[in-house]
Amino acid sequence: MRIAEDGRLAGYKTYIVAAAMLIAGLAQLAGVDLPGFADQSAMQLIMESLAVIFLRRGVQSAASS
Image 1 (tube, rainbow, N blue to C red):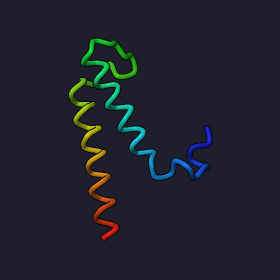
Image 2 (image 1 turned 180 degrees about the vertical axis):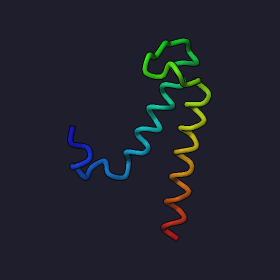
Image 3 (image 1 turned 90 degrees about the vertical axis):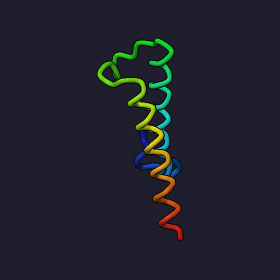
């Protein structure tokens, strides 16, 4: 996969990871067993993903002003 080399997703990689964490957390709340996230609690994944999204937005808005 050439995401790192290709410039199209350069500013969105953090959001993609946060979205994947949010989807995994919501799936765990719905009762889906995800082996890769067995050690993580659903609420921890959801809260961390929301924190990443909102902190990233805060850093971007502070850098642009």
